[in-house]
Amino acid sequence: MTNRYLGMSRRQCLTATGAVALGFLRPHAAFALETIRQGYQTNIWGMPTYYLMRSGLLEKHGIRFEEFPVPSGNLTMQQMVARQVDLGTYAGQSMILGHDKGGLVGIAQIELVGKTTRVMARKELNITTIEQLKGKKIANQTGSSIGNVFVDTIAPMHGLRKGDYQEVRMDVNNMVAAMAAKTVDAMVNVEPYNMIAETDGIATEIMDFSSVDKMPLFMAATPDFVQKSPDTVVAYLKAWLDVGRAFKASPDKVAEVIFGFYADKGYKMARDTFQKALSRVDVNPGFPGDLKPYMQEQAEILLKARIISAIPDWSKALRPEFMAKAQAGA
Image (cartoon, rainbow, N blue to C red; front, side, top):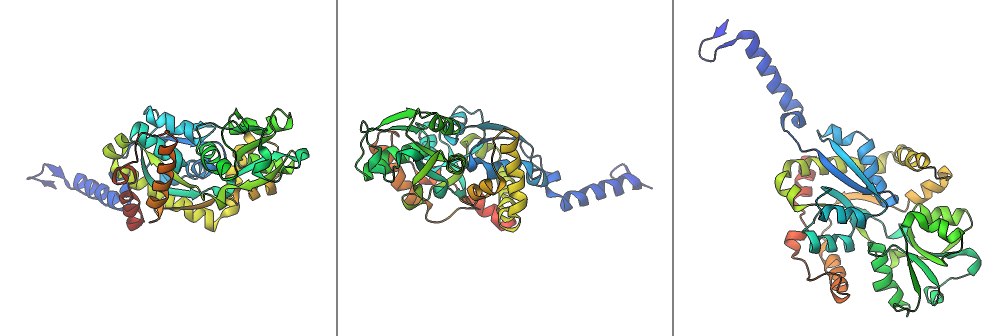
């Protein structure tokens, strides 16, 4: 039978009705979501993002992606300022700088990483305090969040000013080799590199950052992407909520996926060493209410150091409404 008003056969009508029904059952198929360009750092801070991309959770929410790995988050931030990448994780200091330089916005807090960041010294030097680093060569990734926190906060707290030590600019993934070669005396580094150096007897810990800065790690987005693709942002954050549940419910499965990343890169690391490093990351995607006071404090430090031009307008720099929608619809 043909519907004379619509010009459709009974079979065509049933087919169309079925397609609509499937659309309601699978919302991600009914909307054309944007392909995202995902930046991430290859240290432990970026590994929850790596798991997100390898877990199938993005595909579950109808999102396709391209990935852009770099040694540290400040490089992802620079890529985003240049509009080469849409999304990426880094600490609050880089988030503030990215907003100052390119209008980048925070759409979620993904992790707390203060415990993953440590000041380490060569084992044979028997250095136990920051004060003892006076006159020493310190490997530091200049321009990174951890680099800024060390130079602007931790070193001055212990009486060290710029010039009291020699800052050796270096990517975090090259620091352990420099320590082993004795070309530097200490390093400001993140996991898993700290744990590798410690386990191999190369370095010992002076302190971790958590007592000074818990270091919330943001998922940031370009303002262009947020404006153009709000539905994609919400679907993306729903996938992150799934990641948070996986880290809590299936830690061994998560660790297996991430361990494979470093094994493929040729790192010689025992599985239990890696799991200790990963345990220092607190993955809990959300948007805590105390972020604004923390970010205000960090912005004031950066402004005093003349790293940024002005304190951000937080209503533009922090956008919790997307996470609120993701949580409501999860």
